[in-house]
Structure formats: structure tokens, C-alpha cells
Image 1 (cartoon, rainbow, N blue to C red):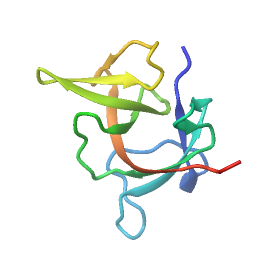
Image 2 (image 1 turned 45 degrees about the vertical axis):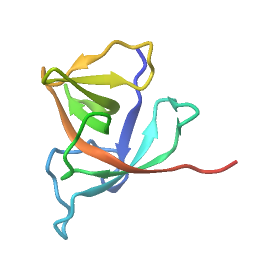
Image 3 (image 1 turned 90 degrees about the vertical axis):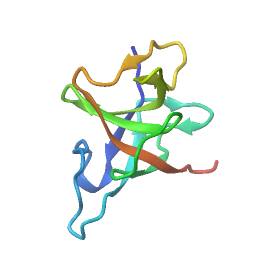
Image 4 (image 1 turned 90 degrees about the horizontal axis):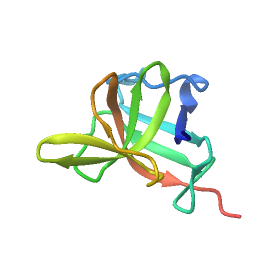
Length: 115
């Protein structure tokens, strides 16, 4: 099952930590999409600006950490009070939030290289 992973540019590809702040106390991170991306909207190599302090809402594009794996991108769905993580590849099943997975940031901007 292929997922869209992201790498923290500031920490040499190491994963994000929920609530982590930089030396200046900020909670904004720049992440690079790896693992194939989600064409055509988020290509491999795209740069994501992620706010770790932002509140995730229904429909938010979120970075999810957990299970010791690289952070991954999902769309958050809130249905009947339950939070589901929707893979950006619609062929993948939705995953429940929890079970070792936590939202560690909300994507605020996406930058891509033009051909």
C-alpha cells in the first residue's frame, strides 16, 4: 500500500514531533513530499508549509505521525463525531485517527516546481 510521506527539511529528513517548536518558539515547518506524491495536485518533491499549532477541521489536509513511520499526508474527515484519515489516493481505505496515529500539523501552503 503506497502512501504519501513527507520529510522534515529542517531536521535532515527526520519526522515531526507533535507540538515541537523551533528555537524561536514557532510551530511552522517546511516538509518535502516523497513517495510519489498525489498527481496532479501534490507532485513528488512539492514543498508543504505545515502549521503544527493549527486546529485541524473537517476537510483539512493534515500531516499524521505514528507507528514509528515517516509522517504521511491525509485529508481529515469528521463524521458523526469520529475522525477519519482519508488517503489522498482514493483507492486506499480510510483509517481511524488514534490507534497510534496523531495529527502533527495542518498544511497551510503547497509550493511546486514548474516544468
